[in-house]
Length: 164
Ligand SMILES: Nc1ncnc2c1ncn2[C@@H]1O[C@H](COP(=O)(O)OP(=O)(O)OP(=O)(O)O)[C@@H](O)[C@H]1O
Ligand SMILES: [Mg+2]
Image: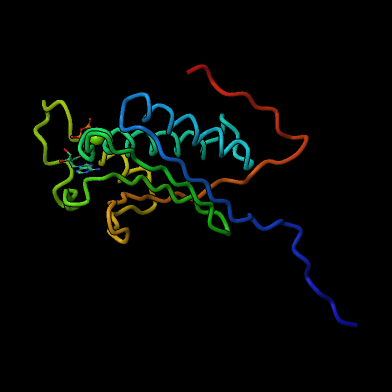
């Protein structure tokens, strides 16, 4: 008789979410909130490690988009994609296609007492991978990816957004 091993683990479906937001502090705050809201809807609750890490990454990339990537009157774009079997790709696109990012070797070269220069260090530490893409003709995209923890669905989900 043949024996077959049947996996009881459900595959993580592909999810995709994109939104255009104003290149303002309010827009950046909204990006973080929409990201955790979307992850919650897909099965990664607000209080999960995956959601917390994603929120930090979205916040850093959105903050950069509205400062270093800002073009007056132009929005920035947030993209979230869950890629099976369990990777989240975060993409933040801004209108400063001409303006590049520091090469990884230069990260952390800001003086210790400087006010800035730490956001991408955090991204580098938290993300499995990150980089910049110029595949769009008018936008530059800074992206990063993280490995997602297990998702939670159905009745096991009891979750509410944290106070903002
Ligand atoms: N979206 C972007 N477009 C253009 N340049 C960027 C972008 N993001 C980052 N940079 C460049 O990379 C540098 C390092 O970014 P990083 O986020 O580490 O520091 P910061 O934004 O200057 O300060 P902090 O994030 O600590 O408040 C920035 O000072 C800027 O020159
Ligand atoms: Mg920054």
